[in-house]
Image: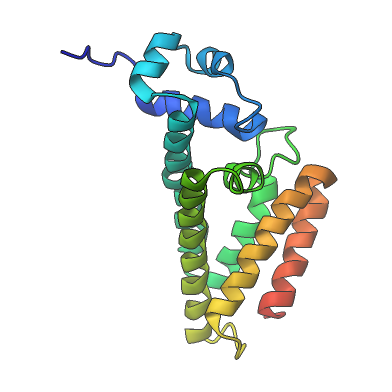
Length: 196
């Protein structure tokens, strides 16, 4: 009979998320994960399997609790245009104090792992589709309430938003200036959505 877990799984995933987010998959060792989670190697392996299996759980955790919370907070606002602007700009303002250029776990993982690992690529693609769908809903809502008058199909506009956001997040790792990235975010949205 398996022994019951005597740790907070959500807390462990939250701590592991921070390590993978800041160090990347390849840059994170099992020792790093042991230190971050407080678990012994046997507990990590018995509860999560290998590093890749833990990383896949971390991606699910990030998708549900971090990205999911941001989608709910910003992209479900009454004012869809304001919500989209808030979603973009807070990628560079809602960071731990002093942090610059950390992008997001999904974008970091796309650039690091998507080419090499099909399982991880599928998981990342699912998250990107979720964000794209929410962009489409926001754009449709803005068109319906008259705050957005573009004739461009919502799907295409959402594609451009997703591509722009991914590019901005990657650029932030080099630029490391949150104010510049907020300005670039607003400019990108103006190009895609217009000046409404």
